[in-house]
Length: 102
Image (cartoon, rainbow, N blue to C red; front, side):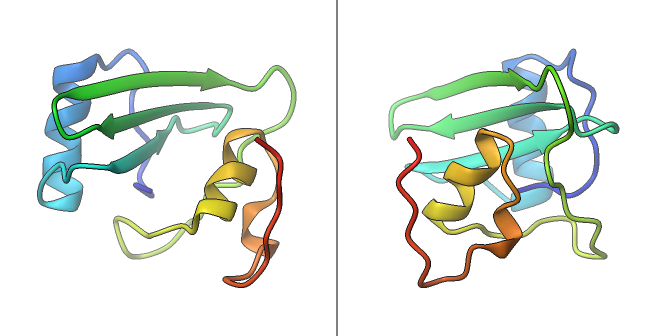
């Protein structure tokens, strides 16, 4: 998860360049998340081992719970990712917490 906001007009190549800048490389079977400044839109870049997929999500109401940290990136568990993409408060889900929402 990239902490700094990203312009949601960015396409696949720009997003991939941002992945490399923030995370060092696009690793196979990893998802990279970016949000806009208002945190009501998110882009997810996924490296599937062959190529890169780019998906976008917009909330009609509310905001994604996005961290404001000094580090440019952070990792999420699968459960936290599932909560985040549907707009739930992911930071309340601990490492051992299991939710079935997707």
